Length: 68
Image (cartoon, rainbow, N blue to C red; front, top):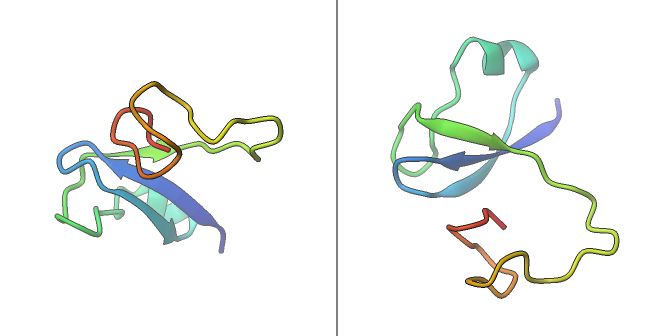
């Protein structure tokens, strides 16, 4: 099973989960921090040619603005 990255739109927690496509489609994914179903899948690139910082508010850590 592959890992997928998500961001909770209620508590802004970024988390990674290992799941099947079927579980994703059935809406069985919940935020690991608060249990909310109000989550968004984050698509991350490979980082080739990418700087450590993706927006003006973060410095390459857990950013609640850009999700990086």
